[in-house]
Image 1 (cartoon, rainbow, N blue to C red):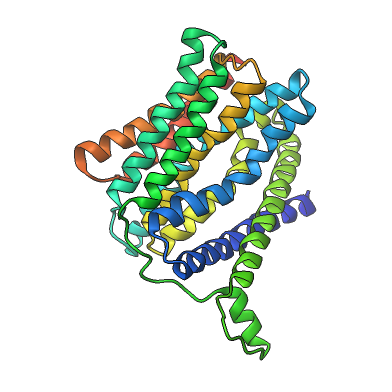
Image 2 (cartoon, rainbow, N blue to C red; image 1 turned 45 degrees about the horizontal axis):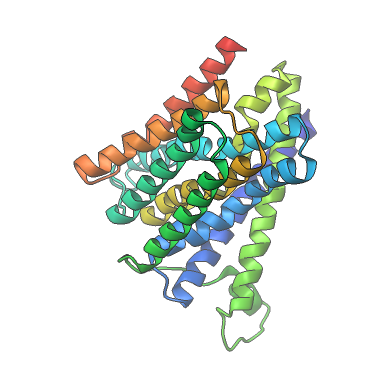
Length: 339
């Protein structure tokens, strides 16, 4: 058990270090090509960290595609927006709260109001269509809904790229370039796209490895302490599939780059509500009931609360973000009661 605990801590350490390197690489990439904060957070970082867990349902549905594997695929599709809108929100809110308590920052989240409002609005609209329309009209128009979702994301991306958004004011030198200079190698372009790609892709792979190790060791610990593997799979394991987004956002919160932190989560929510869901609509029966439907409803309610706050008060409150943890706890309670 001592070795298992060490592996568990090591996996978490891997994810944290990789998240720091990934966010650094994305910031340098955005500055190199003069991207706005909205594009860096909501598209580049969000899609980059969302791709690994998107592969899981694709493999489960398209390549394994039999009985239980399709159910696993649908669960993975629904789990992503659920975790982002509950645990993801909670980690941002708790990070801001912790820093405010030790007087490292004000109890306030600095955001680009238009960007977060756009992200959340697109998510609520597109995810609502994918969840409720098939329930109302059946599966006859699933292909049409899938096309609508994919088109919706392309429209979202185009609007985000063209919208007004602030540039990244401060960023640190690329860590890979610092390492090369440390060994006395002179570079004509320390922010060459090759170095940026090496750092971003490399750290993304490390995050995936760390997340998988994290899940494996956490499962061993759960069994050791007598927690049901099934209950563990429903309550704990989904967190690890979204760890990259969450830790990237926490890293940006600690650096005072709130717009990137929030955009990383809300942008990933839009992506996860469109591309993976389209796979589910096209290649499964997509009959959402019970715990699956509840997770989707909770994700929409959590996002709607944030959207209402943005519209009514022109801000995102840390308290609103903390509510995500309450929604996750309520979901877990429901699973325990009905299991």
